[in-house]
Length: 230
Image (cartoon, rainbow, N blue to C red; front, top):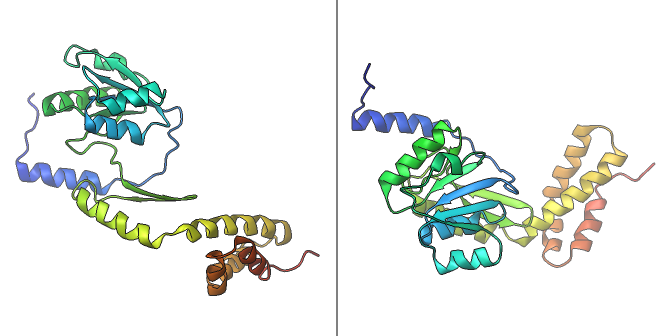
């Protein structure tokens, strides 16, 4: 029995359908095993992004940046010939595999092996199981932007636009909401009533103005929305 072949247009339709099923998630990567194949600039960029995880970069050569990350013990380096490497053995137990070599055929082979081992992939030259979004971080606010790989430039453009809007006071409001929420839990049993007060605080323009100058003052004004302890 031969494998069914698809035309270019059919392959495109299948990939669009697959991408439409993707769901954005925020994942704790600490202690997650991540294998990057390729020690060039792309591999360095990926290693820098995931340096809080358990990262291993496999390659024959490495950029000075990757060697610095290794000296800082942020990543581990494995010097090897990727064409002779037992990829299946190396990726055993991995959370994510990132083929980042300059050889498209080798990257595709690594993806194929990873799929057989049920390991997620993020190939740099094609769509995989995981797409790394353009990320904005402001305090406890994390925003991921993705065009599902169709326009990295647009993702970067949107990130720059949103960075101008999501300032430090938005992170301060998250902190404020969290602290007031704990106070409300101790005073009000009704969840809907607590939610109403939190929304009142969010919609209080004077509180937002105070956040630019004094968090303590903003907190004091927020507490005016909270009924006294009985």
